[in-house]
Image (cartoon, rainbow, N blue to C red; front, side, top):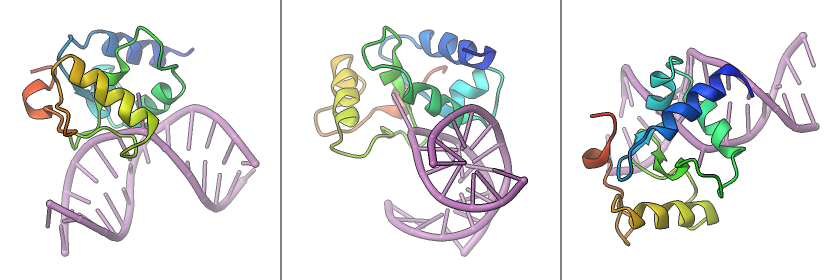
Length: 101
DNA sequence: TGTATGACGCACT
DNA sequence: AAGTGCGCCATAC
């Protein structure tokens, strides 16, 4: 576990319920602009059962970064619908829920 | 040592 | 709106 990972986790942990943040923004907030891929890499090796709100992290296009219909896509969408950040049609309210303001 | 590959992002067609 | 190209960085082979 390196320094950067700790920073990424801290930022993700800080995303308020019902809000969303992009991989790139996480990296920027963590002091490592331009390293969005590293955030994705970290989350890819983070178990989905963690307390970390990984599901509040989406890409800069306001979409879930898992292939449509995949297991991960489904789990993330459910979680987002659960806290009102997306609807059953798969629409994610990125513009309205983006964090930080 | 190179090369390919990702839960990415941005600029430019 | 949808593609394409390139930058970015850790890993795997």
